[in-house]
Structure formats: structure tokens, C-alpha cells
Image 1 (tube, rainbow, N blue to C red):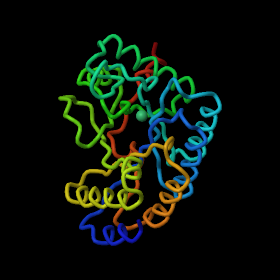
Image 2: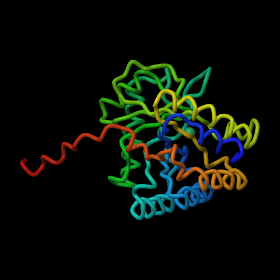
Image 3: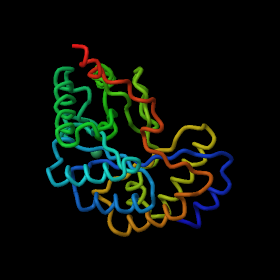
Image 4: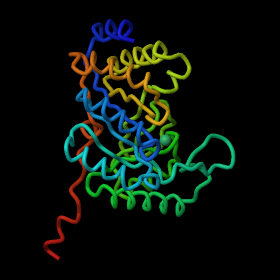
Length: 255
Ligand SMILES: [Zn+2]
């Protein structure tokens, strides 16, 4: 991977901002903690898309500890409610066309409440829909509920929403399954060149639950080389999105 990517990085015509989004926190906790060890050791921020109903007390305690110890390096936001498919046919989605506004709103609110119970104010106000798919209705409900950003695939159909989006470009594990480290490196090289050209941030999507040790070792080696490369700026999602609006609760003292 190094042989392919280092020359690409060295030749980039502009600096590229990169963020790492790992999905499905709540599943495969041991693999999640092993991945967090890799990114934290490299000093690279990681944003976890967490499945609210899948988080248990042990993982919640571990995440609280890690976020409090290194708030610049670990962050958590909401990834659906239970990561269940509700579409009777076609592509999987938890927040797709088959769901009514009431059903979607209920799931969004329950998920947010569950995450807040476990992690309190540590939860970031973004939403990653399971399978990177949701409807325009979901975006409207998210905005109305106070969410401040949405993260899907770069190529996803626009939603006619005012909600800012921070899309992912590279699906690490899909490329790894299809062609191993060479395929991941090729996908990263292509995305790096595209983002250097258009100035948008590059989103690297991980799925710790399917990452075997060899994959994590490969990521660790990549980060060892690339974490401080002068053409890259590794960012947390919060650094790439508008600042959250002040909370209305701050006015409670006048009540
Ligand atoms: Zn997912």
C-alpha cells in the first residue's frame, strides 16, 4: 500500500482534509476497541457511527473513558436505531421510503435518547443512516429535530435538504474484500486526486466489525506513514462542519 500511496501523496497539487468514519459501534466490541487502539496510537481522529440500541454498558463505559481522555481523537454520533431493514423490497434501509414520518421520527428520537443516556453531552449532533441510505423525509426530520449534519456516500442522490452533508468516499472493507490492500490503495489514490482537485474533504469509511487483524495492521502501517504527511490534514468530523448552534437550555436560568 505504501508503494502506491506515498508517490500519490507526494504529487498531490493541494492539501487534502481527511476524516475517518467507522460504522456500527455496538457490534463486535473487541474489534472496535482494537481499531480505536490503532487510530489513537497514530494520533488520528475517528468518528464512530454508533447503533443506539446495540450499545451495552461495558462499551458505553469504555467510550466515555476514551472520549474524556482524548476528546480530539474519539467522537460518537448516531447510526440509526437498531440497524434493521424496513424495506419490503429493493435496497436495504432503516429510514427508507417504506417508513412513515411518525415511524422515522420515533426511531430517531428513541435512538438519540438512548445514546444520550449512555454518553450524555459527548454525542455529536450528526446522523449516519445505516447502509448510507435515507429518504428526503429523513433529512427534513433530522433538521427539525436539531441534528446538524448528515453523512452518506459521496455519490448519493441529493436530498433537497438544507442539512449540511459530509459524505464518505472510500469503503475500506468493500475494497479489501474485492481485491485486498492493492484495491484499497487504488481507491484511496483515486479519491485523494479527486479531493485535491475539488477541495472537498475525503471521507474514509471503516467497518471495524469485519476488519481482521491483517486489515488493522495494514491501516496502522498506512497511518504511520500518512498521519503526518504534509499534503494531508486529518480531521474530526466536527472540524469539517459548521459549529453546533448554542443550546436553548442555556436560557433556563431566566425561567
Ligand atoms: Zn452500518
